Image 1 (tube, rainbow, N blue to C red):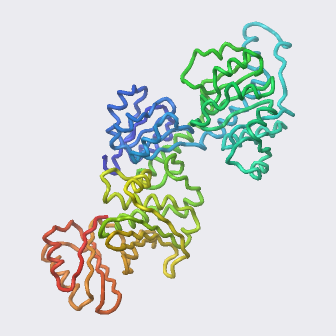
Image 2 (cartoon, rainbow, N blue to C red; image 1 turned 180 degrees about the vertical axis):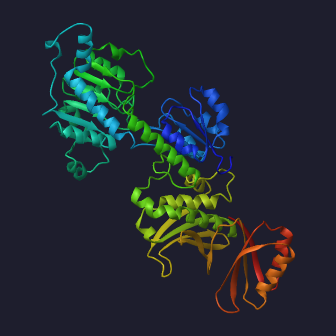
Image 3 (tube, one colour; image 1 turned 90 degrees about the vertical axis):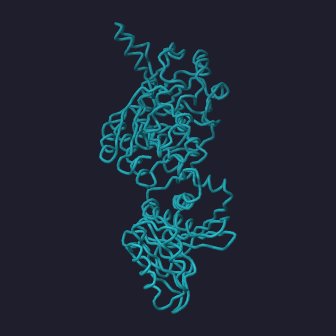
Length: 530
């Protein structure tokens, strides 16, 4: 894998220059468009990130060939051109930009709705052909009509708000939106059957999934009132195109406006033969502002992933609300260090990991911290590349039981992340927090200390507290040219059990470990790399 600072990003579809410039500040960017699948498979192993739009198909073969891939970015909303399941299994983060083109898609929906209602494209074409047919292009008003919106996500909600300005009645169907929330937006929550029965205009704004593919087909079209007008500015395939063709031919559907198709690009389609059908070539996000925003959003998330931070809109990582991320983000590294250290010092075979959050952290859904801690822990033992994306899956495959608990603030620390690892030989405990903007390991088993993991190599020694112990350790390290950068001593009681943690500047050999182990009253010596 490329070293930090020289990470390579491949861009295979056009994105706005602003995103490229953001990435170029720290990383190597190659823009190579119009790749065949074979060409992409042949070159992808060189890259740490891949950025696409909807044209490039990121198949299982591409992902499996991307041995160094850390992140795949989709400069847009949908990710149906990316094998997300395969990426997850490979530990690759998949990100998109679901909010950047929200307003553009909503405005395009209203533009098509108005154009369809007033037959603007048809009238325009007729006039340019030399005809003045006012009576032929009598339209209908939006005011007083019922608009059915299937999918009340970001775009669907923005469409509703704009349609209210035209004094339309808004019916909305979405199983994940509460009636109270919809009512506050001026939307009546309705079943799909009610939408089909009562709406004069119907627009779809859902993702394309197995459950929404062909959502509107022959049976659904037959349930709609005669003269309904349909729009799709979401994803091709949600409306069955052959069944829509039949409904237009039968005059059951008065008009349709389609921006997306099941196969793209397309320049020859049976629907294009209908005069009451308006088609645009996937223009929902095609505004200057949207293209700039999606480019910047995806670029910033790639940078975040490279820096070990949770991206804002990861498809296969738990979504973290902005206000929650502000609290949790400083503790992502803390959790990773806690898990990594615990994995290196435990004895025996682990069977259970209990993760405890104390303080303000306990007030939030902390799955991003859990994933980071597991990623740190499993990086020591898994032959697979472990990331926050697949850490849960790898833990499950290894038979590890993962539990979480939330507790009040500690008497000493406002926030604390603790890993308690149960093995067949006992329990290992490691706790960490943030102090003055730095990660601190503050507990190892029964010992409280302040260890700042900003060096690569550490020695953790358990011994009896006796006069001359530190001197004996210093003698051996000095004689073996081992430079000590930091030293922490924690003891349970004077002349009782104690722990010394040494930060050292270079790795220590097996022979040197044996010399330290031979010091009188030393019971355990562990070397750790963080």
